[in-house]
Length: 453
Image 1 (cartoon, rainbow, N blue to C red):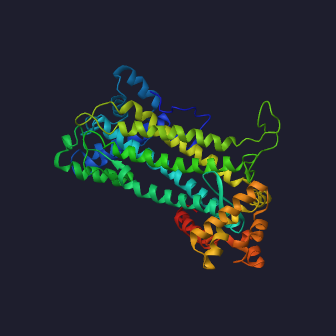
Image 2: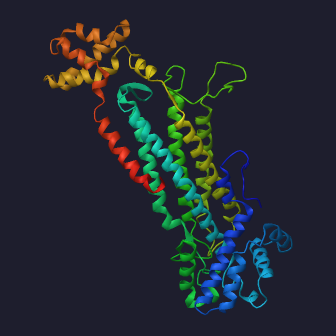
Image 3: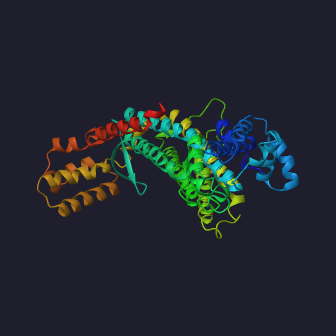
């Protein structure tokens, strides 16, 4: 069965696709065979010469996917074919000890862990890189006042850089999450048919510990024939969670690129066409691609959770779909990260449009600050609230600038001088704690990404 469920020419980097190559999967499993035989020989379970020979042969690069497929055509069992192919290349005296005490899923599950370890080594630096780019944008645009929107409506003034700071902080959090789950998902299991250690007996735990150390994995505390599928569900959940954050960013970019808003735009290269019918269109297609792939990525969580309950010590109801879900989720997220890095790195930001959008409501975005000024003058909150609202609604109906309506209203102008009113309607004075927040986020991201720089 192929383990690349999506077109390798379309999605994912070569580096990520290589992790799920047929030969690479075999190489992972051969590493496990070799490490187990070596560990067994170290404690006297099998002859030292056999352990050394199996280890050497397993890591020789001479056992090929082509040969295993030839053997599998006869046995109809992929692990049995791998064991036979390895035995063929070993010395005759070592052959009885190949795969000793192991079962198929010792190879399958532990090789999954090796794949996931390599996936994370690809993903985490990209998350770090994206976090650093976002933090840089946050600092660059930290002093640019912009419209803050809630419910799709103008709400109050925001630092445009704060948008990027929010996203950068989430990248730092995702790095922390991915680092933290490694001890639960990068599991080595060599405990045999039903998790007892099978033929290896009381020495099975020590052997597993040695194999795990050699493979830079964590030994399973307990298992059935398989690693508990909660581990894979957690892995896929965290990939989907990161994917959802990327979609959150993508949706904001898509919204800010709307013709009516126009504050940002994806890079539009020379010769690019936005529409086959409308020559002037510049569509946010990369952000839309992220939204599309995020839906597919999230959908895999359901399958991963369905795989948790298995019959007794195991059944095969999880096996076929995991050949899709683990590679697919890893490749999809890799593609999404690559795309988002390109988007943010080349994002066009229209500061002039950001500034002009502050006046779309004719100054009503400053209503919160008029309310605050009245409260500070001793006007009860709800009295002030109703006056500010009344004047705002009336100004809107008349198409009047809000600052003029405020100046002309006796209830407000009797409490606030003209100079005080003018200062309220200065957007630069309403960035609040944004500079400190952005600086704190930048420090947080730098710290989180330090090991990847």
